[in-house]
Length: 303
Image (tube, rainbow, N blue to C red):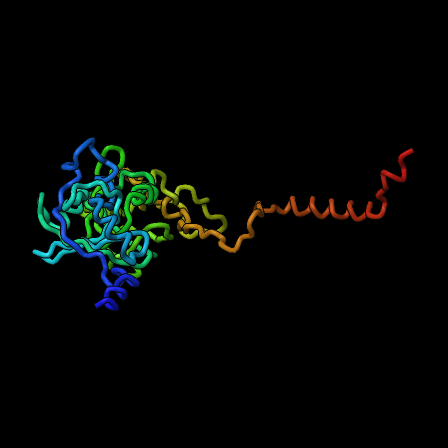
């Protein structure tokens, strides 16, 4: 009998994890001033006896707990903020009670756990108003500082600019429950509930006010049937209000194709060269050849 007690004194309560039951209440039932820091986070308030028991157990820090509603077998995870609750009671945020389908004074089971550090999480806003936030990732990062854990399937609530937004935790890695204390976590957002992609309407080409064929130059050289017809009886041709001859003589409009291989930064001016211009250019070239070799160096001739 003495040896057995001595064994317990050498290893006190190391083989038993923290596992007990409490009556749960929302933060609004907590005596004293309103605690928005608890309502806008993911931590609970426990009684001082829990702290006394946890200090005697081999509990891994930070202290994380699994909260289970045994009547419907639904659970979530949370951290602890303070040990100031009345004995036999715990206080938790309202969104957490809503996830566990708890009412004021219901019995919940609290168990200390050790969960992996988060590396990835995916959220889905429950309203399209969440898209009005300029930088949602920065807002979420700031709000998650009041959280200790994330559980897949939870519906958490964050507050920004006096507005409460609900986010569904769709996925967490490396497990269904992770701790987000001092971690480097990648965050993604799924489309909000009720969000629809805007329809992309193809822009219709506006009709051109000027017919491109009117800008085409008239053909030069021989053109068949260019003249106007005359009647054999000598009478004048009736004018029916249409003038098809000029349109028939115009060249067919061909839309230009840009030169995609044109060198960047090169400006090219293409002009039609007339015969007189060609003769003048030949004369200038011949004059230039005459004066080749007659240049002078300004530095040498300068006195």
